[in-house]
Image (tube, rainbow, N blue to C red; front, side, top):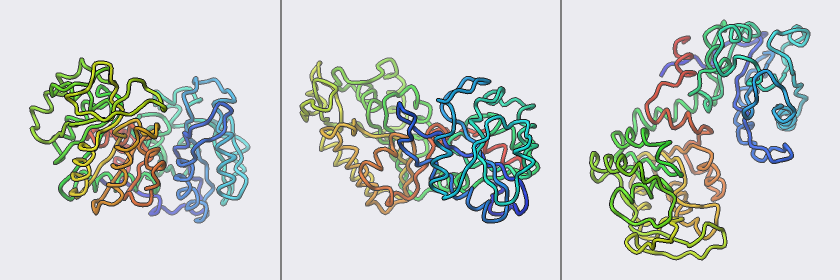
Length: 392
């Protein structure tokens, strides 16, 4: 995969527009609750500034209504956090698409944050007129937002087509390098672990992965649907019974590749204080909820991870937010951390589990992306990446 990289572009004296992913979670008061994505955006900004560029940064935040600005949609909290992390003022420019005095005044070493790009009319539809306007603001366009690479929007795709120079930032480049290493040239055995609530959102990727990997481990509600497909009992557990046929087709097409849990930790209610009971799958009662893998299934999972050459992880295998039902995901996290394999993990819930169990420094690469991570694993063309490849 060949894209031009920011490190290879001379930015001295130039206006550089960085499309970052600063879409951070906030509490009801608007305070940022996790600044992981802001921290991940810093290398591109620091590099461009250090090499004498005037730097403009933009990002989306949430799902604003195009053409309508509200305080809740503002990047103001992000600007404040960036200022803290960089130790300098980060002015926030509200109406920026048409340039103006703020743009005329930009000088090498300056840094501004451009307000939520999804407020601009035409952003989500990748409007060429909007993209051309934004491209005209810069000499160099840098896409450093891999998490949005699966969307063809004005600031992720259109600007890359029209800017004088278009390149990948260090975060985007690192994501592409890590994913390519994991999937294009993996050390075998290649093990994929896919957890989460719904098969419907991940069915196509499960089929694709099953064809590529040596072992496909399923967890959470996805595992429950596969248990149903294999003729097992899940009680009242979260599952998609209408997709059991598709899950069964995967099992039949790839025999032996998708291990089915043999036991589980169950409860009668979905609550942190529910009483955990370990049962074999055959003994799950009609009123039981499966909330975690059982010890025998965990032991089998550990053995798979221990023997892996490459590990791709997306999604927890149980309700790890409840301590009584966190053992399976904790064991998985620890096994990945201790494995000799190259490991790559992605997705919001996965990152939350990694942070909860303190293994971030022992995972080879942690992707900040969710949807783009999954679509890359599936082998889909990511519009933003394709645009950078075309410009390279």
